Length: 137
Image 1 (cartoon, helix red, strand yellow):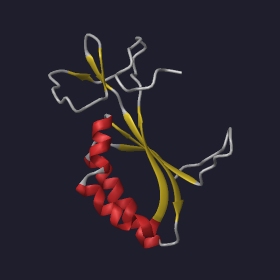
Image 2 (cartoon, rainbow, N blue to C red):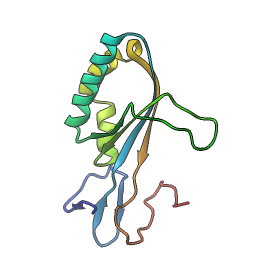
Image 3 (cartoon, rainbow, N blue to C red):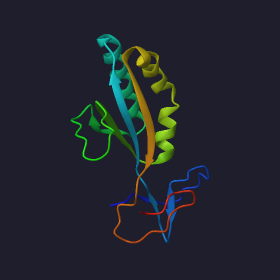
Image 4 (tube, helix red, strand yellow):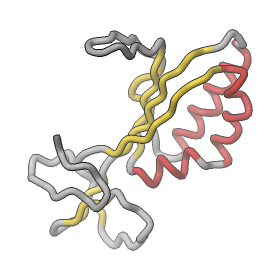
């Protein structure tokens, strides 16, 4: 069930769909990872990243889990998927001083592609798209 937001006034957040109430839409950070051979750097990166994700209300849904290509040519070796309460929180995490500690170890530990995904309302009620979001396909 979506989290009800009342008295929310931050005009910078684009992740709210308005109807009679406002619902917070979850956001996801998806990372396609290639691990390098520096085990100490990888452990430091993972530790700092995990701590910083939790500090910003995030949680791992997938962390270097099994990958199976079902369609197309793309087949990453390892993926990480983290969920955040909303897009703004995910952006704040990505630019945070806490995550910067992990970034000091990233290049020695891994290379990756990182994207931010906006979630959808968890309600079965039809909700109009917020400005700038892609319509449902």
